[in-house]
Amino acid sequence: MAASGSGSAFGKVLGTAAVVAGGLVLGAAATAAWATARVARTVITPVRRRPQNQLIRSFDETAGTVALRDTPDAAMPGRFGLWWGNEAAYAKLGGLIEREDGTVVRELERVEFGTLRAGRARISGYYYLQPEELGLEVTSVEIATDLGEAPAWVFPAPPAADDGRWVIQVHGWGASRQEGLRAVRTFHDAGFTCLLASYRNDGDAPESIDRRYGLGGTEWRDIEAAIHYAVEHGARSIVLMGWSMGGAVVLQTITRSTALDHVTGIVLESPVIDWIDTLEYQGNLLRLPDMMTRAAMRLIESEWSGPITGQGAPIDLRSMDFVARAAELSLPMLILHSDDDGFVPSTGSRALAAARSDIVTLVPFDTALHTKLWNYDEAKWSGAITEWLREHVSATAAPVGDPVA
Image (cartoon, rainbow, N blue to C red; front, side, top):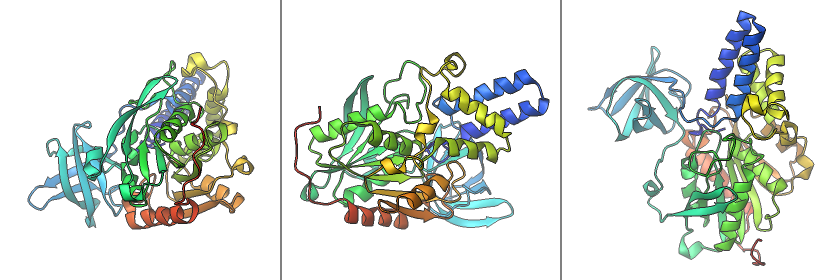
Protein backbone atom coordinates (compact mmCIF):
# COMPACT_ATOMS: atom_id res chain seq x y z
CA MET A 1 0.00 0.00 0.00
CA ALA A 2 1.76 2.97 -0.86
CA ALA A 3 -0.04 6.03 -0.20
CA SER A 4 3.05 5.74 -1.66
CA GLY A 5 2.63 8.58 -1.94
CA SER A 6 3.24 5.41 -0.50
CA GLY A 7 4.67 7.02 2.56
CA SER A 8 1.29 6.81 4.26
CA ALA A 9 -0.21 4.00 2.29
CA PHE A 10 -2.21 2.56 5.14
CA GLY A 11 -2.89 5.89 6.84
CA LYS A 12 -6.49 5.93 5.67
CA VAL A 13 -7.01 2.41 6.98
CA LEU A 14 -5.56 3.35 10.35
CA GLY A 15 -7.81 6.38 10.62
CA THR A 16 -10.87 4.27 9.92
CA ALA A 17 -9.76 1.67 12.44
CA ALA A 18 -9.74 4.38 15.09
CA VAL A 19 -13.42 4.97 14.31
CA VAL A 20 -13.98 1.26 14.90
CA ALA A 21 -12.34 1.49 18.31
CA GLY A 22 -14.64 4.34 19.22
CA GLY A 23 -17.63 2.33 18.12
CA LEU A 24 -16.60 -0.57 20.33
CA VAL A 25 -16.30 1.69 23.34
CA LEU A 26 -19.90 2.73 22.78
CA GLY A 27 -20.76 -0.95 22.93
CA ALA A 28 -23.58 -0.73 20.42
CA ALA A 29 -23.83 -3.79 18.18
CA ALA A 30 -25.14 -1.72 15.29
CA THR A 31 -22.27 0.73 15.60
CA ALA A 32 -19.74 -2.09 15.73
CA ALA A 33 -21.24 -3.69 12.63
CA TRP A 34 -21.20 -0.37 10.79
CA ALA A 35 -17.61 0.24 11.80
CA THR A 36 -16.55 -3.26 10.73
CA ALA A 37 -18.11 -2.70 7.32
CA ARG A 38 -16.36 0.65 7.04
CA VAL A 39 -12.98 -0.92 7.77
CA ALA A 40 -13.57 -3.54 5.08
CA ARG A 41 -14.64 -0.88 2.57
CA THR A 42 -11.65 1.31 3.39
CA VAL A 43 -9.15 -1.49 2.72
CA ILE A 44 -10.47 -2.00 -0.82
CA THR A 45 -11.53 1.55 -1.74
CA PRO A 46 -8.97 3.70 -3.56
CA VAL A 47 -8.11 6.79 -1.53
CA ARG A 48 -8.25 10.15 -3.27
CA ARG A 49 -7.50 12.47 -0.34
CA ARG A 50 -4.57 11.52 1.87
CA PRO A 51 -4.38 12.44 5.56
CA GLN A 52 -2.55 15.64 6.50
CA ASN A 53 -0.89 14.18 9.59
CA GLN A 54 2.10 16.53 9.89
CA LEU A 55 2.30 20.14 11.07
CA ILE A 56 4.37 22.93 9.51
CA ARG A 57 5.28 25.39 12.26
CA SER A 58 7.00 27.96 10.05
CA PHE A 59 9.05 28.65 6.92
CA ASP A 60 12.25 30.70 6.82
CA GLU A 61 12.68 31.82 3.21
CA THR A 62 16.00 33.58 3.91
CA ALA A 63 17.59 30.52 5.49
CA GLY A 64 15.82 28.10 3.15
CA THR A 65 14.38 25.99 5.97
CA VAL A 66 11.08 24.69 7.25
CA ALA A 67 10.19 23.90 10.87
CA LEU A 68 7.92 20.90 11.48
CA ARG A 69 6.41 19.24 14.50
CA ASP A 70 8.69 16.40 15.57
CA THR A 71 7.33 13.08 14.24
CA PRO A 72 9.10 9.95 12.97
CA ASP A 73 8.53 11.02 9.35
CA ALA A 74 9.57 14.62 9.93
CA ALA A 75 12.75 13.61 11.76
CA MET A 76 13.97 10.94 9.36
CA PRO A 77 17.25 11.70 7.57
CA GLY A 78 17.10 11.87 3.80
CA ARG A 79 15.08 13.79 1.24
CA PHE A 80 11.31 13.79 0.83
CA GLY A 81 8.32 15.57 -0.59
CA LEU A 82 6.19 17.94 1.51
CA TRP A 83 2.54 18.68 0.69
CA TRP A 84 0.41 21.30 2.42
CA GLY A 85 -2.58 23.53 1.82
CA ASN A 86 -4.82 20.54 1.04
CA GLU A 87 -2.36 19.38 -1.63
CA ALA A 88 -2.25 22.82 -3.26
CA ALA A 89 1.44 23.30 -2.45
CA TYR A 90 4.49 21.04 -2.77
CA ALA A 91 8.17 21.32 -1.93
CA LYS A 92 11.25 19.10 -1.83
CA LEU A 93 12.75 18.58 1.62
CA GLY A 94 16.46 18.04 2.18
CA GLY A 95 18.43 16.95 5.20
CA LEU A 96 17.86 17.37 8.90
CA ILE A 97 19.35 20.56 10.37
CA GLU A 98 18.09 20.70 13.94
CA ARG A 99 15.85 18.76 16.28
CA GLU A 100 14.85 20.03 19.70
CA ASP A 101 11.86 20.92 21.90
CA GLY A 102 9.39 19.02 19.74
CA THR A 103 10.43 20.76 16.53
CA VAL A 104 12.41 19.53 13.55
CA VAL A 105 14.13 21.97 11.19
CA ARG A 106 14.90 20.70 7.69
CA GLU A 107 16.42 22.09 4.54
CA LEU A 108 13.85 23.43 2.10
CA GLU A 109 15.42 22.47 -1.22
CA ARG A 110 12.84 23.78 -3.63
CA VAL A 111 9.22 24.92 -3.64
CA GLU A 112 7.66 23.42 -6.74
CA PHE A 113 4.34 25.24 -6.46
CA GLY A 114 2.07 26.89 -3.90
CA THR A 115 2.38 29.58 -1.23
CA LEU A 116 4.48 29.18 1.91
CA ARG A 117 2.29 28.98 4.99
CA ALA A 118 2.12 27.12 8.28
CA GLY A 119 -0.53 24.49 8.93
CA ARG A 120 -1.40 20.86 8.32
CA ALA A 121 0.87 18.97 5.93
CA ARG A 122 1.89 15.57 4.63
CA ILE A 123 5.38 14.14 4.14
CA SER A 124 5.65 11.87 1.12
CA GLY A 125 8.12 9.35 -0.20
CA TYR A 126 7.48 10.92 -3.59
CA TYR A 127 10.36 13.21 -4.42
CA TYR A 128 9.87 13.61 -8.16
CA LEU A 129 6.40 14.47 -9.44
CA GLN A 130 7.05 14.73 -13.17
CA PRO A 131 9.09 12.34 -15.32
CA GLU A 132 10.89 15.26 -16.97
CA GLU A 133 12.56 16.10 -13.66
CA LEU A 134 14.92 13.16 -14.12
CA GLY A 135 16.54 14.71 -17.19
CA LEU A 136 16.13 11.49 -19.17
CA GLU A 137 14.35 10.73 -22.41
CA VAL A 138 10.76 9.71 -21.62
CA THR A 139 7.63 8.91 -23.62
CA SER A 140 4.01 8.77 -22.50
CA VAL A 141 2.30 5.68 -23.88
CA GLU A 142 -1.04 3.86 -23.61
CA ILE A 143 -1.22 0.18 -22.74
CA ALA A 144 -4.22 -1.83 -23.94
CA THR A 145 -5.94 -3.57 -21.01
CA ASP A 146 -9.24 -5.40 -20.81
CA LEU A 147 -10.77 -2.22 -19.36
CA GLY A 148 -9.29 0.20 -21.89
CA GLU A 149 -6.12 2.20 -22.41
CA ALA A 150 -3.93 2.58 -19.29
CA PRO A 151 -1.31 5.37 -19.38
CA ALA A 152 2.33 4.62 -18.68
CA TRP A 153 5.74 6.26 -18.90
CA VAL A 154 8.61 4.62 -20.73
CA PHE A 155 12.22 5.68 -20.15
CA PRO A 156 14.39 4.03 -22.83
CA ALA A 157 17.67 2.45 -21.81
CA PRO A 158 20.84 4.28 -22.84
CA PRO A 159 21.35 3.38 -26.53
CA ALA A 160 24.81 1.96 -25.96
CA ALA A 161 23.54 -0.32 -23.19
CA ASP A 162 20.17 -1.35 -24.64
CA ASP A 163 20.15 -5.14 -24.79
CA GLY A 164 16.42 -5.67 -24.26
CA ARG A 165 16.29 -5.58 -20.46
CA TRP A 166 13.22 -3.85 -19.05
CA VAL A 167 11.81 -3.17 -15.60
CA ILE A 168 8.08 -2.67 -15.06
CA GLN A 169 7.31 -0.57 -11.97
CA VAL A 170 4.09 -1.37 -10.07
CA HIS A 171 2.97 1.24 -7.53
CA GLY A 172 1.15 0.65 -4.26
CA TRP A 173 -2.18 1.28 -2.52
CA GLY A 174 -3.37 4.86 -2.81
CA ALA A 175 -0.37 5.69 -4.98
CA SER A 176 0.34 6.35 -8.66
CA ARG A 177 3.08 5.90 -11.27
CA GLN A 178 4.96 8.79 -9.66
CA GLU A 179 5.98 6.42 -6.89
CA GLY A 180 8.41 4.63 -9.20
CA LEU A 181 10.16 7.75 -10.48
CA ARG A 182 12.68 7.41 -7.62
CA ALA A 183 13.83 4.07 -9.03
CA VAL A 184 14.27 5.08 -12.67
CA ARG A 185 17.82 6.41 -12.43
CA THR A 186 19.08 3.24 -10.72
CA PHE A 187 17.66 0.95 -13.40
CA HIS A 188 18.54 3.31 -16.25
CA ASP A 189 22.17 3.41 -15.13
CA ALA A 190 22.12 -0.40 -15.09
CA GLY A 191 21.02 -0.45 -18.74
CA PHE A 192 17.28 -1.04 -18.31
CA THR A 193 14.33 0.47 -20.11
CA CYS A 194 11.88 1.54 -17.39
CA LEU A 195 8.10 1.26 -17.79
CA LEU A 196 6.03 2.88 -15.05
CA ALA A 197 2.59 1.31 -15.27
CA SER A 198 -0.83 2.38 -14.07
CA TYR A 199 -3.54 -0.09 -13.11
CA ARG A 200 -7.30 -0.12 -12.63
CA ASN A 201 -8.83 2.29 -10.12
CA ASP A 202 -5.59 4.17 -9.40
CA GLY A 203 -6.87 7.47 -10.79
CA ASP A 204 -4.94 7.16 -14.07
CA ALA A 205 -6.00 3.83 -15.55
CA PRO A 206 -9.62 2.92 -16.39
CA GLU A 207 -11.90 2.04 -13.51
CA SER A 208 -13.44 -1.36 -12.95
CA ILE A 209 -17.21 -1.59 -12.62
CA ASP A 210 -17.03 -1.76 -8.81
CA ARG A 211 -14.26 0.86 -8.52
CA ARG A 212 -12.59 -1.23 -5.83
CA TYR A 213 -9.11 -2.63 -5.36
CA GLY A 214 -8.66 -6.36 -5.72
CA LEU A 215 -5.54 -6.21 -3.50
CA GLY A 216 -3.61 -7.73 -6.39
CA GLY A 217 -6.28 -10.21 -7.41
CA THR A 218 -7.55 -8.05 -10.29
CA GLU A 219 -4.74 -5.54 -10.87
CA TRP A 220 -2.37 -8.24 -12.09
CA ARG A 221 -4.23 -8.31 -15.41
CA ASP A 222 -3.07 -4.76 -16.14
CA ILE A 223 0.52 -5.70 -15.34
CA GLU A 224 0.19 -8.68 -17.66
CA ALA A 225 -0.87 -6.17 -20.33
CA ALA A 226 2.25 -4.13 -19.54
CA ILE A 227 4.35 -7.26 -20.06
CA HIS A 228 2.72 -7.75 -23.47
CA TYR A 229 3.54 -4.14 -24.34
CA ALA A 230 7.16 -4.50 -23.26
CA VAL A 231 7.71 -7.67 -25.29
CA GLU A 232 6.05 -6.11 -28.33
CA HIS A 233 8.49 -3.20 -28.02
CA GLY A 234 11.67 -5.20 -27.74
CA ALA A 235 11.87 -6.51 -24.18
CA ARG A 236 13.84 -9.73 -23.96
CA SER A 237 14.30 -9.86 -20.17
CA ILE A 238 11.80 -8.24 -17.76
CA VAL A 239 12.10 -7.48 -14.06
CA LEU A 240 8.87 -6.70 -12.19
CA MET A 241 9.23 -4.24 -9.31
CA GLY A 242 6.38 -3.77 -6.83
CA TRP A 243 6.01 -1.17 -4.10
CA SER A 244 3.85 -2.04 -1.04
CA MET A 245 0.56 -3.40 -2.45
CA GLY A 246 2.35 -3.39 -5.78
CA GLY A 247 4.36 -6.28 -4.35
CA ALA A 248 1.12 -8.24 -3.92
CA VAL A 249 0.18 -7.33 -7.50
CA VAL A 250 3.53 -8.61 -8.77
CA LEU A 251 3.21 -11.87 -6.82
CA GLN A 252 -0.27 -12.41 -8.24
CA THR A 253 1.09 -11.69 -11.72
CA ILE A 254 3.86 -14.25 -11.58
CA THR A 255 1.52 -16.96 -10.25
CA ARG A 256 -1.49 -16.24 -12.49
CA SER A 257 -0.24 -14.82 -15.78
CA THR A 258 0.55 -16.94 -18.83
CA ALA A 259 2.80 -14.23 -20.29
CA LEU A 260 5.90 -14.86 -18.19
CA ASP A 261 8.36 -16.23 -20.73
CA HIS A 262 10.44 -13.05 -20.59
CA VAL A 263 10.10 -12.30 -16.87
CA THR A 264 13.45 -13.03 -15.26
CA GLY A 265 13.36 -11.47 -11.80
CA ILE A 266 11.41 -9.60 -9.12
CA VAL A 267 12.26 -6.64 -6.90
CA LEU A 268 9.91 -5.84 -4.01
CA GLU A 269 10.04 -2.68 -1.86
CA SER A 270 8.13 -2.73 1.48
CA PRO A 271 5.87 -5.42 -0.02
CA VAL A 272 2.63 -7.02 1.12
CA ILE A 273 3.69 -10.67 1.17
CA ASP A 274 0.66 -11.87 3.18
CA TRP A 275 -2.55 -9.80 3.35
CA ILE A 276 -3.88 -11.57 6.45
CA ASP A 277 -0.66 -10.89 8.35
CA THR A 278 -0.76 -7.27 7.20
CA LEU A 279 -4.38 -6.64 8.20
CA GLU A 280 -3.93 -8.37 11.56
CA TYR A 281 -0.90 -6.16 12.16
CA GLN A 282 -3.00 -3.11 11.46
CA GLY A 283 -5.66 -4.26 13.90
CA ASN A 284 -3.10 -4.91 16.63
CA LEU A 285 -1.51 -1.53 16.06
CA LEU A 286 -4.84 0.10 16.86
CA ARG A 287 -5.55 -2.36 19.71
CA LEU A 288 -8.71 -3.57 18.04
CA PRO A 289 -10.31 -6.81 19.21
CA ASP A 290 -9.19 -9.71 17.07
CA MET A 291 -12.79 -10.56 16.28
CA MET A 292 -13.31 -7.13 14.71
CA THR A 293 -10.30 -7.51 12.42
CA ARG A 294 -11.37 -11.04 11.49
CA ALA A 295 -14.92 -9.87 10.80
CA ALA A 296 -13.69 -7.18 8.40
CA MET A 297 -11.59 -9.77 6.57
CA ARG A 298 -14.58 -12.12 6.34
CA LEU A 299 -16.56 -9.36 4.67
CA ILE A 300 -13.82 -8.91 2.08
CA GLU A 301 -13.76 -12.65 1.42
CA SER A 302 -17.50 -13.30 1.34
CA GLU A 303 -19.70 -13.90 -1.68
CA TRP A 304 -22.67 -12.14 -0.04
CA SER A 305 -20.97 -8.95 1.15
CA GLY A 306 -20.93 -7.02 -2.13
CA PRO A 307 -23.82 -4.70 -1.15
CA ILE A 308 -21.90 -3.86 2.05
CA THR A 309 -18.37 -3.43 0.73
CA GLY A 310 -19.16 -2.39 -2.83
CA GLN A 311 -16.79 -4.99 -4.29
CA GLY A 312 -17.83 -6.84 -7.41
CA ALA A 313 -16.35 -10.17 -6.31
CA PRO A 314 -14.91 -11.67 -3.10
CA ILE A 315 -11.17 -11.56 -2.50
CA ASP A 316 -9.48 -14.78 -1.41
CA LEU A 317 -7.06 -13.39 1.18
CA ARG A 318 -5.64 -16.81 2.02
CA SER A 319 -4.48 -17.26 -1.55
CA MET A 320 -2.47 -14.06 -1.04
CA ASP A 321 -0.20 -15.58 1.61
CA PHE A 322 3.06 -16.10 -0.25
CA VAL A 323 4.86 -17.49 2.75
CA ALA A 324 2.43 -20.41 2.61
CA ARG A 325 2.83 -20.47 -1.19
CA ALA A 326 6.62 -20.09 -1.14
CA ALA A 327 7.17 -23.42 -2.90
CA GLU A 328 5.33 -22.08 -5.98
CA LEU A 329 7.90 -19.32 -6.53
CA SER A 330 10.90 -19.85 -8.79
CA LEU A 331 12.19 -16.47 -10.00
CA PRO A 332 15.12 -14.74 -8.28
CA MET A 333 13.76 -12.09 -5.94
CA LEU A 334 15.16 -9.08 -4.12
CA ILE A 335 13.20 -7.74 -1.13
CA LEU A 336 13.94 -4.42 0.55
CA HIS A 337 11.99 -3.82 3.76
CA SER A 338 12.39 -1.78 6.94
CA ASP A 339 11.66 -3.38 10.30
CA ASP A 340 10.00 -0.18 11.54
CA ASP A 341 7.73 -0.03 8.48
CA GLY A 342 4.64 0.86 10.51
CA PHE A 343 2.15 -0.07 7.78
CA VAL A 344 3.21 -3.38 6.23
CA PRO A 345 5.12 -5.54 8.72
CA SER A 346 8.46 -6.92 7.62
CA THR A 347 7.56 -10.30 9.14
CA GLY A 348 6.22 -11.60 5.81
CA SER A 349 9.34 -10.53 3.94
CA ARG A 350 11.61 -12.13 6.52
CA ALA A 351 9.57 -15.34 6.57
CA LEU A 352 9.60 -15.63 2.78
CA ALA A 353 13.35 -15.00 2.69
CA ALA A 354 13.87 -17.73 5.27
CA ALA A 355 11.58 -20.18 3.45
CA ARG A 356 13.18 -19.56 0.05
CA SER A 357 16.74 -18.55 0.78
CA ASP A 358 17.67 -20.24 -2.50
CA ILE A 359 15.96 -17.53 -4.57
CA VAL A 360 15.23 -14.62 -2.19
CA THR A 361 17.75 -11.95 -1.25
CA LEU A 362 16.56 -9.79 1.66
CA VAL A 363 18.13 -6.40 2.30
CA PRO A 364 16.75 -5.17 5.65
CA PHE A 365 16.62 -1.60 6.90
CA ASP A 366 16.09 -0.54 10.52
CA THR A 367 14.60 2.96 10.46
CA ALA A 368 13.31 3.79 6.97
CA LEU A 369 9.55 3.43 7.58
CA HIS A 370 7.18 2.45 4.74
CA THR A 371 8.34 2.78 1.11
CA LYS A 372 10.83 5.47 2.15
CA LEU A 373 13.96 3.36 1.90
CA TRP A 374 15.28 5.28 -1.13
CA ASN A 375 14.56 8.55 0.65
CA TYR A 376 16.33 7.47 3.82
CA ASP A 377 19.48 5.93 2.29
CA GLU A 378 19.60 6.24 -1.48
CA ALA A 379 23.13 4.84 -1.69
CA LYS A 380 22.28 1.63 0.16
CA TRP A 381 19.00 1.21 -1.69
CA SER A 382 20.42 1.81 -5.17
CA GLY A 383 23.56 -0.17 -4.43
CA ALA A 384 21.56 -3.21 -3.33
CA ILE A 385 19.45 -3.17 -6.48
CA THR A 386 22.41 -2.59 -8.80
CA GLU A 387 24.39 -5.46 -7.26
CA TRP A 388 21.40 -7.80 -7.36
CA LEU A 389 20.71 -6.98 -11.02
CA ARG A 390 24.34 -7.65 -11.87
CA GLU A 391 24.26 -11.04 -10.17
CA HIS A 392 20.80 -12.28 -11.10
CA VAL A 393 19.64 -10.62 -14.31
CA SER A 394 21.95 -11.47 -17.15
CA ALA A 395 23.01 -8.74 -19.56
CA THR A 396 22.80 -11.39 -22.27
CA ALA A 397 19.23 -11.29 -23.49
CA ALA A 398 17.25 -14.47 -23.89
CA PRO A 399 16.37 -15.44 -27.46
CA VAL A 400 13.27 -13.73 -28.73
CA GLY A 401 10.40 -16.10 -29.34
CA ASP A 402 7.02 -15.48 -30.87
CA PRO A 403 5.23 -12.39 -29.57
CA VAL A 404 3.16 -13.06 -26.47
CA ALA A 405 -0.39 -13.79 -27.53
